Length: 461
Ligand SMILES: [Mn+2]
Image 1: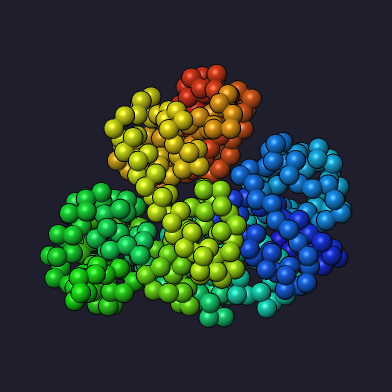
Image 2: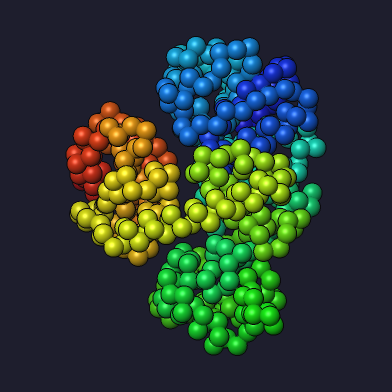
């Protein structure tokens, strides 16, 4: 079956059920996915309820009701079909909308998954949107959420833009007037909300000497260009509101700065996806910042607040999310400082640190990514954290750079292999992956991952 056939079969199956239970992941992609399918179901007059889970494991599986509702798994399920089977759910009552590696079981669950069709850079929200469009082409406004989910899952990161069917969705949304695509925009996080000098200083892809991690350097750089970076009443301008000629001055200045340090400037530009209907200077304006807002909701285990924002709430839910976002940043900054102050242990091919129970396990991955740019960027970083609900379990997060991935490193592969050896489980992507392992095997695990990464560098030997 082609992806199109799968999509059609899914839409047909959904239409045959009067009652649905949605089971979704609590990250930005999962929250966006849930909002897409939930709104499509509402518009089709299908009654439904949602369960958000951090991950699908035996404990959370108990929350999935054993009733007559049709179960739609979003952004999870493909790799946990054994659990769905063990839970006693039959082929007739399950639909999986996912983009993760599928683990087939005896039962043939209906599934729409872009991965087996070779579309590695599309997230679950993209898959769910295709199904929603099949249900009713009037759902094209939900393309915004599909793009947010894709960007949240870093699908645009490697190529500096969405590709394949995920980009087609963005184009569709742009065609209908819901999305503004800016092809060669500044590849920087925070272009809608952060003062430009802060935005530049916080950006490390590409790494710009004298500007990256250097707020004063970034400010001096902009002052030297002689452009307006503040309004007459002293409010700092954000990138999005700069006049085009000033944007050109900034980018050509940055290009010079990068090239003079012997680096390549191609990653300075990326395609951005903006939402022209949203208020200026809010995180709702662009897909990246919107995704962070949803991730913050998920990380504070308030995915429904994110869901409300996806459905258009700009009042109480939005204010609550903004508050979580602020907290989220504070805790991440503390974690980053902790990692840098404590220092990592370097092995031959990786560097690692155990942060104990000081930080929530939901943010260590982000902290690891941010710390990496200030550490040895050639070695993948591993951060271990105690699991609050179960101290016998350790959560592991790993991050590396595009350059290391281009050299053949695949963190997901290493973590899946090493965690399987100690009775844990791993998953993720080449550039960012995670695992759960028994606490007692931490030391073995670190060394084993180090060894596996070493082998990935020299696959022939
Ligand atoms: Mn996802």
